[in-house]
Length: 140
Ligand code: SF4
Image (cartoon, rainbow, N blue to C red; front, side):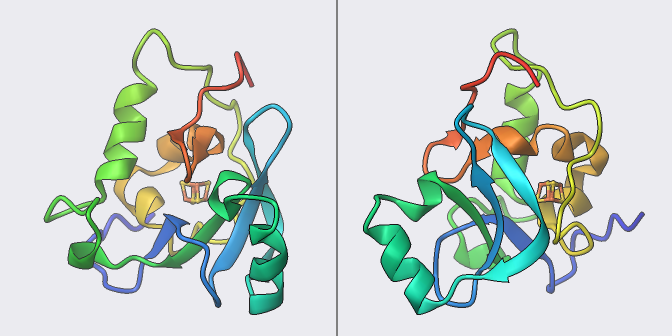
């Protein structure tokens, strides 16, 4: 497994909704993200429809190129959101991690996976971009 987090071609797994972004999952009724098995691209038609129902980032997860230093979450060497998720999941308030890796259409290029490996994937379903770490469910 590659741990080269310096690569410039990694993908942000919690990106804004924008034309060309990959839709990697949808938030279910339990507040957790259901990862897609097939990648879909957000086009202008999708975005127009999605925005009529509120914040798309509250209901879907999008992926785009990791912007590294151009992103406020970049610490200088890594993605701070991934570390925030990891730290939160160690607290007593944290929900139970998934037992098995979710399907994921971007695992090969995901910034968080490159940083933290399987462990972050087991917590990924709790991350809602508009709301960040969503601990809405009691368990997996
Ligand atoms: S953390 Fe894991 S499950 Fe989440 S987007 Fe990245 S590779 Fe996929």
